[in-house]
Image 1 (cartoon, rainbow, N blue to C red):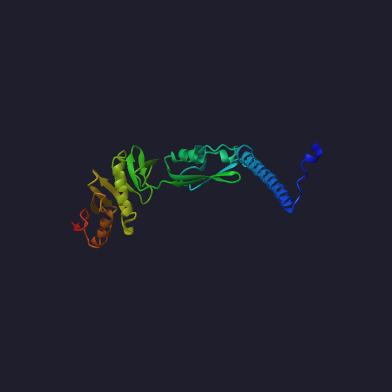
Image 2 (image 1 turned 90 degrees about the horizontal axis):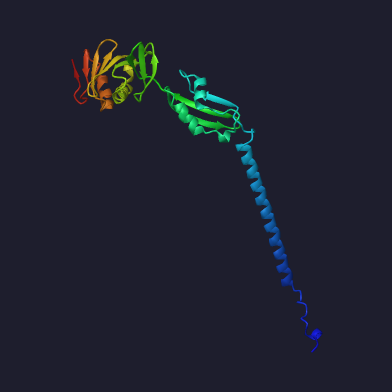
Length: 247
């Protein structure tokens, strides 16, 4: 038999063959489309990342400080150390918050990026609960027993504490006592004497005394003092709140 007689004949084209080829072409087109879209997304993300991180489009242009009364906004801003002109995304707001929190008058602080061009610093200042005498004036003590500011005179409504200003645990206990007092005693405590944690005595502006004892059960003691002070006396003892006494 001749070579021509044995040559294979062309495969017949059927509907199934056509459909298979069409599916292959659609698959290739979809793959190319997906690759193009993915490349476009990656490109957009890269461009956005560059804009945020390296360009000046979203650079810090100002610092907004809120919550300051006795502190200076300029001092807070300087402590934060915002790099004006650098992109907001590269500003380390946690490190800024730590630096501001180190200021003696700051109780807490929150630093945030305010897109597109600002850094916001929200400060909560320490509030005086007690004042401790020192040479030439007074140290103001906050609710945590922290001595945070020296002043020449005691602010109105703040009691003077006869306590070692270095004894923070005792100062905190005395501060807790002051904060649990009923409202009618606000501004009426002239001096707090505390030789130890168990011997807290409140001296009122009229020279009457409240024997408080320790800071334990202060809520019960604050409730006990209300009916007790409806009676005339010079000494009100609530150191044992279940058995208050007058003298």
